[in-house]
Figure 1 (cartoon, rainbow, N blue to C red):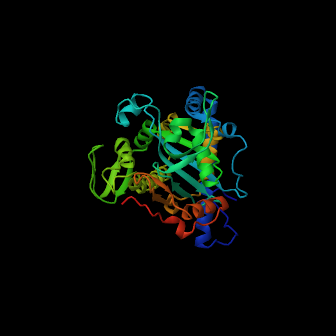
Figure 2: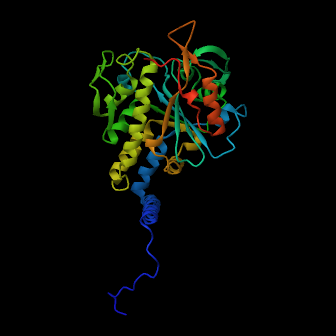
Figure 3: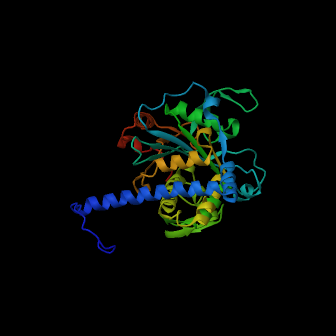
Length: 363
């Protein structure tokens, strides 16, 4: 047989739908294979191995399991996962102080908090925002110096971080929800800004004009491409929207999260090693995770397990809250709606419509 004579394929041609599915599966498999090969090849070169080590060393870890011990909710009987994501308003470092508005602000608070639930199968996700002004019962927590911080009622949720650190925030969320937090991820002001700049900005649809005189952010309604600094101002603005409370900006934070995830998802990182490193460096150097995710390989494995989650299908919900009767500037969990929401996450079931509506909406 001559070399240019190609025998016909005896197999029947697949239907168009199945063919697309198989080709898509092959392409995805090829991408993963290429990614593994790239990692192996890079690890074999001394110079690039140094870059890998730098990225790995960027990540700060917190041993949540050791800090909390056995006094925790049971793990889900399914393969569902719960990730607590915090945006910290730490003023540590010159860049964080400048981005946070400067000034002598002591400690740090959890500026943004979301419980991200990934149900069994990992084909979708739900993000539940906890308003920072929510009054909660902070459980007894161990402090870094070995002393014990006693339990206290009616404390602002965002103060728990500054008073006792990330492990106590996890414990507070678990006590108020009964939901086991499997992983913890925190990023500060500078890290957020640098990540957005590293991916070339994020496009958002601004729902209405924003004129925040406190931050200087001015945006007209419509589509805007935001750089890191303006993105940070966008997710933190509260005076230019709604009633000026924390509740008004939660919708913007959730919208931005989906836009950011979509932007990262559509970029061809394997096609640009330099771009991949730039993004990875920005994403890791201001990142704090639980010890189970505190390595580049662990983060990569977790990210691969989330590959099937499409940001377009991700559901965003605010914890149902009501204005506190004693202090209308604060909110409290609205029962029984909040209880129904947490139960759905614990049971890995669909969230009832009644649990998605909050009596206090922030205008």
